[in-house]
Length: 345
Image (cartoon, rainbow, N blue to C red; front, side):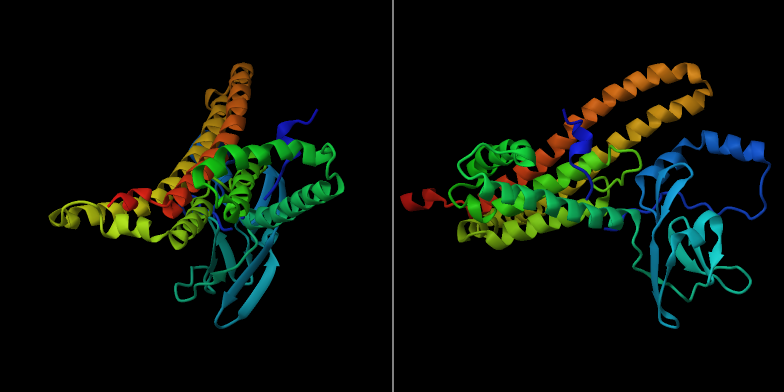
């Protein structure tokens, strides 16, 4: 029997930077003080784990270096390993200041006139690339299965995904969009599995917080916004720009309708970002309580509660993908719907 988390794994683009922006001194504090400060910095620990970074840290002390790719007008394109900038090291006059690469002067101060353009393969970008490959492999296999087992019972991963695909088609996309659903189904299916797989990925130890990244949810929302409004028919735009109200109310209704059009993708973006990020923060906060209380005695109780929360997060992983896809389907459906009420005039 498959263990849900490990069945589908990995898959998108620049993350949010850590919210903390403190500049650390070079003189090293006493080891005991440093350890004590680390122990109580639960906020820093949480931000470190939910933010993007230039290396891929799976657990404390186990970090996969990733390529840093920088461009400056005077030096051109430069590429080197992120390990060269670990622990505050300086390489080729570059330093990693809280996941922001800066150029230093000869005296060690930040060069304010040079701002390197960062095209690095960060943890989120690496996860995007790996996930894209895995998604292609999974659905190429499913596609081959449909051809090979035509008229027969599905086998392997096809039997695992086919009920989900059929459910999304018959219960979500088709009722929301109508007879023209086939034009939009490939995008909506990709959207669902992209979010679902990345939600599951975020639950794995060392996984990237992709769907809890505002840049990711923004891109998904913008794509939905473009597809919805570029597909919209004349009735949709008439309802927005020429509402069926007395003309003296248009100066109120038209701005309200336009704001409504913009709020739809905005709500999609914020809902996914907030729910997934909140889940990570709750889980990390629970484990942080062990160090706050400075006692392993609380570990069993916290572990049981964290296990319960993990089960809830599995449900949330599916629900957030489902809700995003359902609302996108409804937005597209409302934009291409034929308004038969017009015929009565």
